[in-house]
Length: 327
Image (cartoon, rainbow, N blue to C red; front, side, top):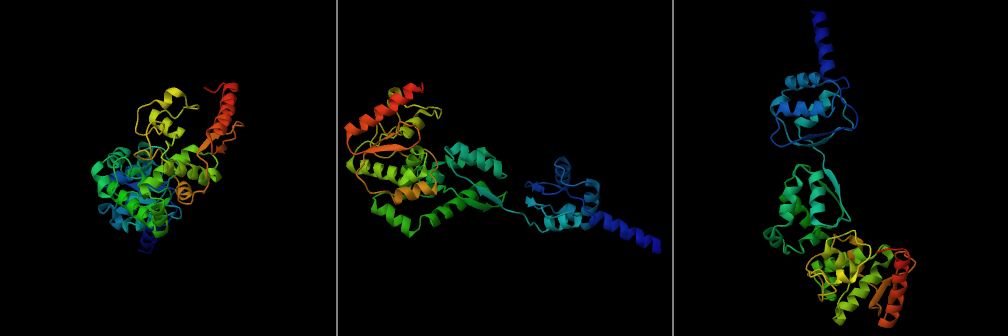
């Protein structure tokens, strides 16, 4: 009898307490998964060293009948007992979803689809839905301005609609009284500020130039001048490989072409960063209304208050492009 008790104790210890998990694994359990699905996934992804022992432990613990979906980080878990305890209580871990510098809605939908249970098709459908945009106070064109680049802790199996709602909550927090008041003083809506910020971001390479470039575009808006921003032409052409904007590009018929249309385009040309948005809200006050890339191709700009000086600097830049055979 004593021997039997010893054997049972040894068996219990082996099943529940010996280290059975590989280090630093993440376990994903999809909605509707059965215990069979779970064990197949565990084996396929090499979560544990011995799947049979996990199955036995789960059966003894009664876990095989109550599978709670979610994303579970297993960094400090080694035994079947610890794993089952975590899974049984549904102690899933949130995704640290960080995003910035994403150009298009479809790219954003792709990143969402990579990080959450829902696929990119479900997210792009929401991002393009006019009714969803209107529900949050946006148009389908400017809806993209609602997504503020940052790091968000969101559970992996959160529904696409709830994730969008979470971004709206963060958007409202971002547009606090101070930022809203600054936008109002500029006679711009938060959406318009973000649209302008997307142009500023598309224009600059060096972030320290953002407030000056923003001030230049504000000057042009206030004077009723065309913005004539090359990044909007590239966006209108839908060709982001363009290295040199040519006359043919300036003639592209599109509401996003600021060489043909006064004012701001109907939506952003990229997802502007917080730095770009704040650069617009805190833009430099100056008299510049012209700028051109510096001829040293450093990524910086020459700024001018009159057309003559601007054309002189622009010719320098064009000659350098010709010299380097950049077409």
